[in-house]
Structure formats: C-alpha cells, structure tokens
Image (cartoon, rainbow, N blue to C red):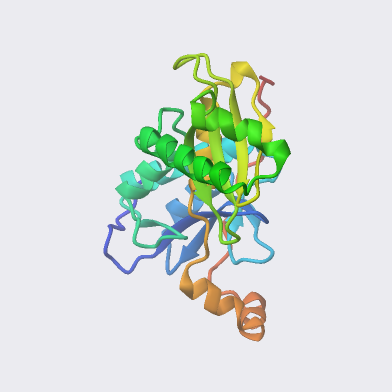
Length: 253
C-alpha cells in the first residue's frame, strides 16, 4: 500500500480501539486515503458499528486473532505514513500504537511482577490481621502471604474490586495460572487455566484487564447527547468503505 499522506497532515486519522459490543474496531476521522481504507477492509474490518460510528471484524473471530489483525494493520498504516492513534488514548500514536499492539500479544513476564507480589501479600496480610475476609477465603489468603500462590499482576476497576493474575511458584515454564477476585471481604479464584496454557495467561490478562478501554472525553460527551448522535448516524460524515473482493477459499487449519 502506498500513499502520499504523512503524519501531521490533514489527510485523515485512523483510530483503533476495543469495546464489548464490537471487539476490535476502527474509527475513520477526516479524509482517510483510499488505499488505507482498502487495507482496513482487507484486515477484516468490514462490519459497520451499531452503537459507534466505526468498522469492526466479525464477532466470531477469536479475540486474540482480532488483536493480531489490528496490530498488523497498524504496522501497515504506519509504514505507509497514514496517521494512526489509540481511540481510548489519542495521544498514543503511530509507532507508540504499534508497540501497544505488540504489548497486547506479549506472553512475557510483567516488569513490575516482584513489586506487585509484595503489594498483594501486604494487602492480604492486612485483611487477615483485621479479620475482614470470610472464613472460606482465608486459606487462599494465607497461601498468598506465604508465597504458595504468587500474584504477578493486578487491576482494580471503578467498583473497587481487584482482579489479580496469580500462579503457583514451580518455575518459569511450569506455572498453573489463575485469576483471583479481591474485595475487602473476599479473595477467591474465579478462573483456573490449564497447565499447558502457561504464560498465555499473561497475554490474556494484558488484553482483558490491563488494557485501557475507557471512552475518551469527546466520545463520552457525544454519548450524553443522543439526539445529536442520532443525527450523525442518519447522515454520517465518513464515506463507507469500498466493497472488497469476493472471499477466497482457504484450507482449514
């Protein structure tokens, strides 16, 4: 794909993001070059959004495959000097966005895993000392404090509930991973990963918990004005993507 559009021009911007309704999606801003539109279509973003003026992939596509497709598309657009940005964090652009999609697919250790493990032990130790946890959850709490269960990453949502990725400590390639849910009265396992899944659990946690998927302020403001949104939906400012070639038959994997 070649185009004369370069970063910083008024030729348009491609923003990529994720939400529950659409999965990975693309939002076109301004006059996005036709070759870039064709690349977006070829990457699988061929469905029009229902609650957001965007293009998304088929929902039947595996979420991690959606991320891989989005990452390849970002690399392709950056190489063609088409400006791209993170829809949720518009200041994250071009090469930084390419790095973001590589991070979403990363199965490697978390850089701050040791600090997180210490933090989790301190939190749970305080819960035990104060008698806050229900009796059924205290054994797991004692395992966290003793290091029998090691917390590698954590994230707290607005409701104050913490979601922690934890593992057994048998070695770098022999972990059994699990997801823990923590609040002031509870600490329990919500999901166990199979032994063979291993570090892929880190990739899942990055994509489902650590990734910023909040709506930017401008999008929240639009959502608060439904009549304006309805008018925009009735007369969208962005021309539709061109039709793509007929699907090619491929061998099943």
